[in-house]
Length: 460
Ligand SMILES: Nc1ncnc2c1ncn2[C@@H]1O[C@H](COP(=O)(O)OP(=O)(O)OP(=O)(O)O)[C@@H](O)[C@H]1O
Ligand SMILES: [Mg+2]
Image (cartoon, rainbow, N blue to C red; front, side):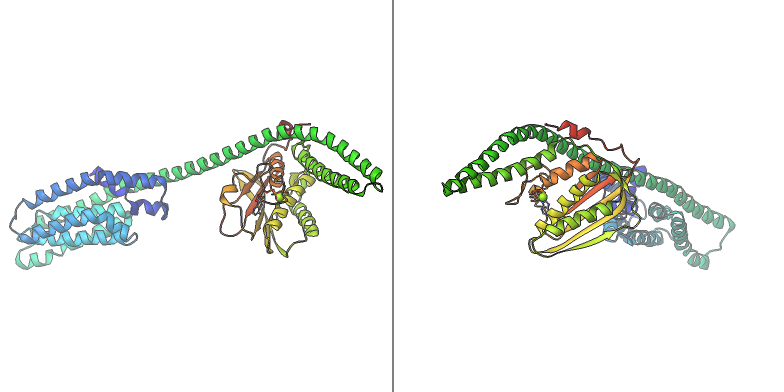
């Protein structure tokens, strides 16, 4: 009986109730286990039915058919429940009551005196497993009523004695007793299953979060190592660049009239050196230790300034900006200038991604991430989105898919957000466009921002 119950309790329809249709890993585990036990249960059922079949009345063909039908129903019950997830359990109990009622009609001269009456335990126990306490009582009452329906033909022929009434009452009371006991056990098991399932889901969530944190840590390490190495290099490059630039300018002045071609070449040298110098300066801005000057600011104000700055210098196709700012977002501790740079870089990328124009949606809302309250800013565009193969790398320095890009924009964003103890995420692509979200913790929610990581990558 115990194995039978456990198998029922582990059935998909059953756990489905607890998981509201979701298939969690625990569910798979139980379904597999159920399948493993299936052959054992088959054998048990066959043995039980064969035992009943060889007991008198053996030549009653109806009895044998009914036993066969009970066996088939029992073996196919799992499929019935899977096929009719909500109504299946009603069908199963109802059919069992019907077959039990037919069976006792064919196994006794007077049906109500049939020794096969315990067959009613089958629908009663099934109801106890699939339904709550009230459902169990109702179904047991229906099974008892079906059994008692044979009272009518019996009293047409025989007298109903007190001892017969007592016997009948005892049998019916035992139906209820069995139903109640099994139901208690089933409800408790269901509760346990639900608890394990919630636990398994939480564990899975924690695992995912852990993987995400590990990925972020790897990214930070990569950035730090790369920053340290290249900042030193960039610093060394800047000095000779200054000398080249100065010399080219002098050359240009000297040769201005006497040799126009040489003067033009000197001009090229000077302008290219300017470009290189701007690049090196930008890189050093990224790699240099940052000393954040944090104060409480409204994130919306900083975002607005960034959007204005990007729109003002934009010369490409028309871009609409849709804003969705929650009104009661609290101020957070941030360095205005660095954070403005974060939002400028994200908005700039979105503008550049929408080569045929489009919509940039910016939202700001108060959220809680891993029990830390803060503000989340999302930049979502209608461009082509970030290709799958680039998703992991775009936060690394010098990863770019643009002809004139340097690939520092997101690396800078990532570093500044890190220094604010926030989180930067590229949301899973949901159709069109890319969506970046920046989370900035509220004051007191996390350790105060410190330039610790920036010190790690200092190169100057
Ligand atoms: N909104 C976006 N939509 C599609 N791809 C994006 C988006 N934002 C970033 N990317 C991808 O990520 C890459 C890296 O972006 P990042 O801002 O770091 O560098 P960049 O824009 O190429 O150069 P720059 O240093 O001038 O910012 C981009 O080249 C682009 O391929
Ligand atoms: Mg960029």
